[in-house]
Length: 278
Image 1 (tube, rainbow, N blue to C red):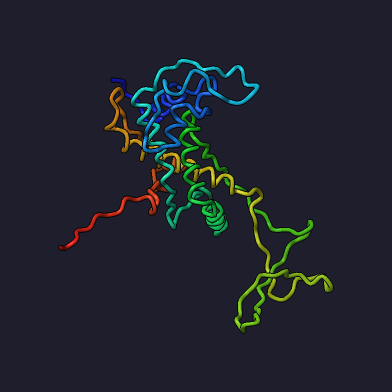
Image 2: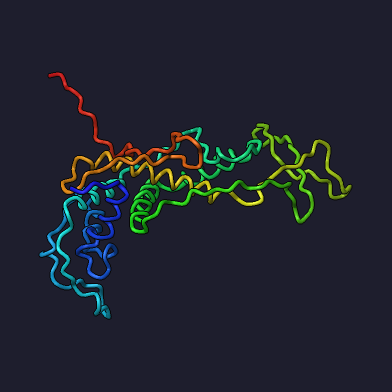
C-alpha cells in the first residue's frame, strides 16, 4: 500500500488513470473514465468493452483511434467520483472574510475592495461556482501546482479626473416618493474653478487588487476542497494510504486562520427522516 498526500493522489488519478478510455484525447474525450464519472456523479462507469473499438469524433478525424488502456484503478475511480460530487457543493465565505489581512492599514480601502470582490464572485450562479471548484481541483492536479495567492500591497494615490484633482461632495436628494437619500456627486465648481463648500478628496489604489483577492479566494477554495476530499475518500482506498495535509488556509499570514468552506448546497442535501405517529 502506497502512502500519499491528497495532492499526489489527485495527480496520479487525473494524469494516469482517469484519462483511460479517452484515446489520444484523454480526459477531454466523452468516453474517458473521468467524463463518465462527471456525467453521472453517482459513479457508474460503462464497461470499456461496450464502447466499441473506434471513438467517433466526426468526419476528418482519422488519427483519434481507439487505444487499449485498460480500466482505471479502483482508487482513481473513488477519487473521480468524489471530485465529480463537488458539483453539488457551494462556497461559503465568512462574513468577516478579509483576504488582505497582511496589507498595511489602508483606512478601510482594502476591506471595501474585498467586499466588492466577494460580491462580484457571488453574482455567479451556484452551478458556475461548483464548476469552478472542480476546475480548480482538476487543473491543479494536472499541472502539479497550487493556485497563486501572491498579493503585493497596492500603493494608494489621490483620485484624479482628466489629470486634475477629483473632488466629491455629498448631496441630499428627495425622490418622487418624498424619500430622502444622500448621493456622492462631483464637488468642483467648474465656473468658479474651485471646490464647492464641503467638498473632499478621496484615495484609490494605484493597481486594482480585485484579481489578487479572487486569487486568494481560489486558493482557499482549493484547500477547502482538498480537506473535504480527504475526509470523503480516506476510508475508500484499497491501494493507497492517505496522509492528511497540514497545508495552511492562510499562508500569507504567520498563523493559519479559518477561511472559506465547501458545503453541500441546501437543495442537494438529503431530506431528514422524521417519525410519523400512527
